[in-house]
Image 1 (cartoon, rainbow, N blue to C red):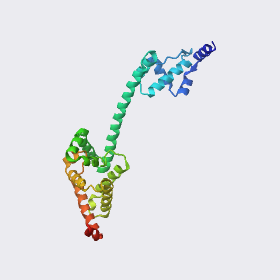
Image 2: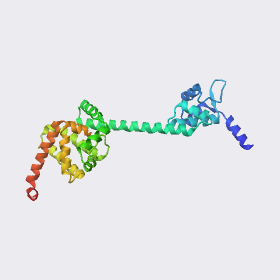
Image 3: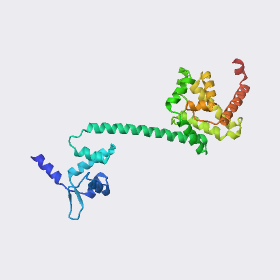
Image 4: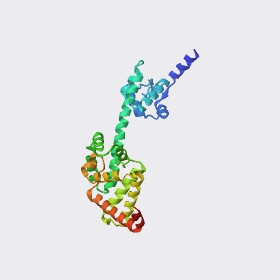
Length: 270
């Protein structure tokens, strides 16, 4: 009996619309809209037409907020709160499937944005070139890339391919590779024997040795593929212009010659 009295008092308690706004953070405009579409009708109105809500109204509003945070549309929320025997499990499972699908789309969008940002770093001011090259890469599906990698590389080499930096990667290793290529392009007019170009080449060789030490045969094959625009695109490598690759090759020869001059005993031992 006492519980019923308490419940009645709570139901009869009136809360002005301004207080509802303060308690929930929902604007007066939104509350009026909910009233207009029948999602949340106030229990009463003052003689002046001001909406007054009960404790039960406030609880329904909190349910609406909760379901809205999970991504349900207002019509779906109305159905879920109105139909007492509605199968909430089915609704929740459907919403979960939708959220997972949207997450996948957002992840793909994130990858596209990273690719564009990193390719713009490659290209410098040539933003149009970055977009064109990404469009070229996007024409190759993941399955197509896997097929060509199987054709071009042995099984153990395919594992090495997975270590290559990714244009959409946000790991420190990939970001450093992107930075090195961008620096090489920035200094391409300096010439292969310029100190800044030689520093870039040295770091590229250090990073190559860190990831592919003892895999000279694989690196030779990879370089031949890199120099062939069609093959490098087939396996999903970001397109680099032949002039930049030629600069690296020339700078690499300069680097080797200097190393042999500075350490002739190592050349004799080999």
